[in-house]
Every structure is written in C-alpha cells, then in structure tokens.
Image (cartoon, rainbow, N blue to C red; front, top):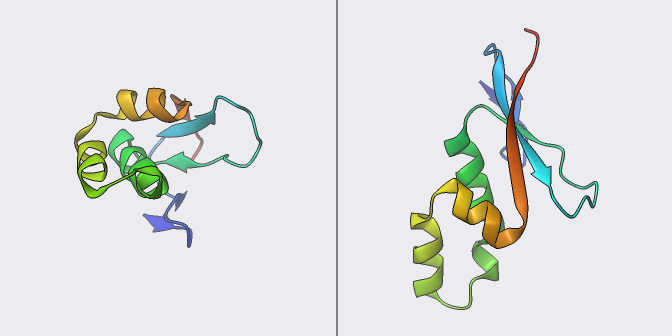
Length: 83
C-alpha cells in the first residue's frame, strides 16, 4: 500500500475501499481508506485535539468507528474501485 503525506491511502491493489463522507459537505474531505480500521485511526488522529482532556482522548481511542462518525458528523461507505 502507498499512502499520501496526510496518512490517507493513495494506491492499493484491492478492489474495495472505504470512502469517508463529510455529512456537512464542506468539500474538504474526499479520502478513501483501505479498510474501516484505517479510517477509524485517521478520525481518532483528526479529532484527538478536540478532546478536552486526556481521559476524553483515551475514551475516543476505544470507540468503534460508527460512534466516532456519529460524534463528529461523518459517514462512510464501501466502494469498489478498478485496479
């Protein structure tokens, strides 16, 4: 796998990818990820500064992807890309 400087997936030979959807549609985020765990880790890193203290940040790291998306107004879907 090859990643962009910001940690998002740039190229991979797999057919299925996870598309990050900005529910607020700001147009800033059009990233794809190799799998849901990569997306979850990306969102944790993106929003760790939003946490008020270290305890909140540790709680964020334990949340499943769906909860993180709901908390910060994201969504995702599985897409197929040609090789």
